[in-house]
Length: 194
Image (tube, rainbow, N blue to C red):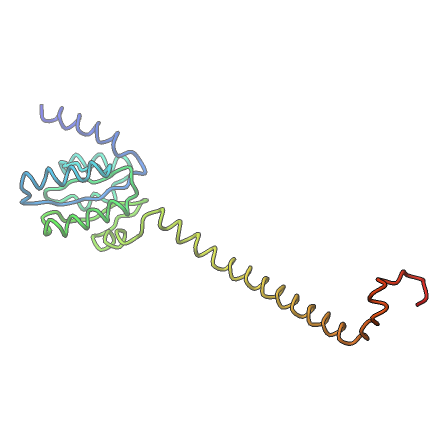
């Protein structure tokens, strides 16, 4: 019977962890019932899946899916953490919860895009801003040089306009002022003698 249960668990895990899935391996100890319930509710609300696993079954399934680089962290009581959100967001939440629960939940490592990350790497991943913030930062960094270029062109055209205005005023100052009779009679038609 235990072998059949392990096969059923493995089949379910194979569906949940297909090739390309990113995950964390988290250890835990001495959590109270209310703490566990509150922790699981927080993860569920954030669309993060927390699954306590049997290390041998998880190792087999992950290695079979091509995700075996992270199986070296499966030691002692473990849980796999994955979700539909980006792994840096999951890392951030787990680092925060680890601090909040006074290290009764601790990060052992993680797997992302074909590479295994030790705890220090996961902490670095947690410091990466969420994707919308990264997009805004990228747009801002692209916008700044364009704004400087537009400002430079506006400065050049402003300077040119000021120079042309100065030349116009200078030429007006050089020509003799019109006689009062010519100003009263209006403009002189071309080809007519004054």
